[in-house]
Structure formats: structure tokens, C-alpha cells
Image: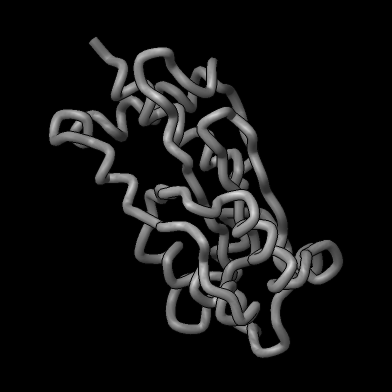
Length: 169
């Protein structure tokens, strides 16, 4: 499947995996897909005060805490990399409220301000498209076959679903 259609440019879509939900959760992986199809994904090493861990969240994203401790990049490095690639973009997320909070934690830890604007992916859809979202997303997911539940894979699925909905006859 192409990353973009000739009729409608693809949106930049971002996804965040986290240590859990709630007040003390934090980002453990961030990924995004640009309109040209370029994908970025990285694990984030927890800051010393980021200690919350939810076993149910780990069962969903299948990223063990030991992996992020071993292979995650420092929050500052991740925030700088995201800003470098997304500066000036409007970026869309399907979990806007959670992703906004988790990105806030990431950028606070890095003592940076995001150089991009985060918007709710729902803003890209009209009512009819929103009504068909789950059905079309399931179709696109089925066509793609098994994928890891990871941030960039999820972002690509969301981007392809938006394109399918926008370009439906």
C-alpha cells in the first residue's frame, strides 16, 4: 500500500506506548510516520523518577521494562530527535489526551518545548468517516497481516486508515 495517495496527502501520524495509564504513567516508546512514508520509532529510557509500571500495559505492548532500561534512549535525545524531524508539522494522534500528556512528560524531562503541533486525529474525519473508522481500520489491519503492537506500526495503521477513508468513493 502506498504511504500517500495522489488525491490526498497523507497526514503525519504519531503514536506513543506508555508504562500504563493514569497520573504516574510515562512514555516508553514513540513512533511516527511522515507523509512520505518515512517512519521513526524509538524506545525511551525512563527517567529516575519514572517508576510506575503496569503489567497490563506491558501485556498489551509487549515491551518489558528491562528492555527499555537496556535499549531506551535518554528522554532528551528522543525529544531532540522528534523536534528535528517534526518541526513545523501538525501531527495527529488517535489517543490525543494520553499522547499529549506522555509527550509533555518527555519534553519536560528534556527541558524542551515541542516544535510541532499535536492534534486529535478525529479532526481529519467527517461524521461519515468517523462512523466507519473501526470497520475500515480493521480491514486495513487485516490486509497488512500480523504486525507488532509498536508505536510506528500503530502510527502507520492509523495513517493508512485515514487515507482509505478520505479516498473512499
